[in-house]
Image 1 (cartoon, chains in turn green, blue):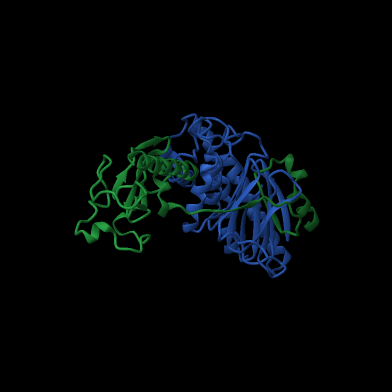
Image 2 (cartoon, rainbow over the protein chains, first blue to last red; image 1 turned 135 degrees about the vertical axis):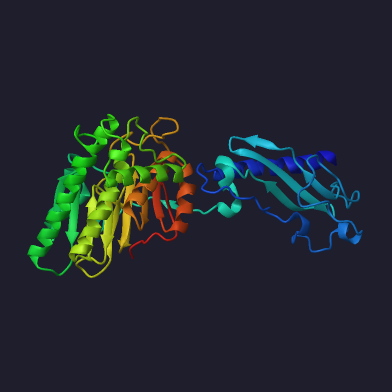
Length: 171
Length: 249
């Protein structure tokens, strides 16, 4: 059962690393704090009241201890997962250190969270800082335009440019 | 009235759409061309007697420079910080503020036109555009963004009023843009266009993003909050655009 927990944490860590790499950017304007993606203390994914609450215990905290911890009661159900909050080992990648934690209740993973770097080049991988551009494929179109924006041409290459054709047509 | 002027190592196309006497429009174009040639004399890195070259040789100190050049130097320093060092007037070694000067000089040219009575014009300095008001057709200016592989095609068409459109790309002058952090030519992005209120800033942002490579995609996305939209094409032909890009219908 320990092994399966470790496997789950490992998979999440791997996923976080992929996310970290894919979203990495290089120029943070303002380092920002890293609110959790998933609220471990109050996960909405579990419809039933968590066993921890019914036993009068609360999960230790939103930010679990550095070592994997098992802070609530024992096995639940046949899944082999122990209830509690588990934190994976910190994984370093070129963009910073990412640490994943999961919450298990009722024998199921009910929440997952990852800490993100908050300073340096990687600060902007924090989800709130991610703004994205819409992706498509580049189009090649012809249209009637007043001016053409492009990489600066020289006086020599101007003659071959679309802008030169426009200038001639409107001269 | 339309005019194309060879200046600053490129060609500046000036389009005035105001219903004013021809003589007035002619005078405005002459004034703008005079200003652009003045900028070339004072800021060109190719003219030994320019203020920029004299500062490079330490014949004059920053304190002795004109107010215009001190403004340019300060703006370049601000942009260096704002772009995390990717816009760098010293990327190639000695001071070269050309990446800011062109857009700045066109902003001033446009302001001079407004002062002289032109509220509908479009100035295109070698691919970097400042537009105001409406075109002669009564609609916003239609600005095409050059396709990064097919010189006679467009990858986007924008409807632009009172905005600047700047494009930096690797297709026109080869490895002209370097990543100032590595000294290596910029890789990853083929063409970056930034649309926003100020041409000098739009141009600097486009150049910085190009230097960043693919990391520039997420960096550009954040500029939208400051009123700078963007459209870019990667080396492998993927296109990205921000939601506020003023695409023409």
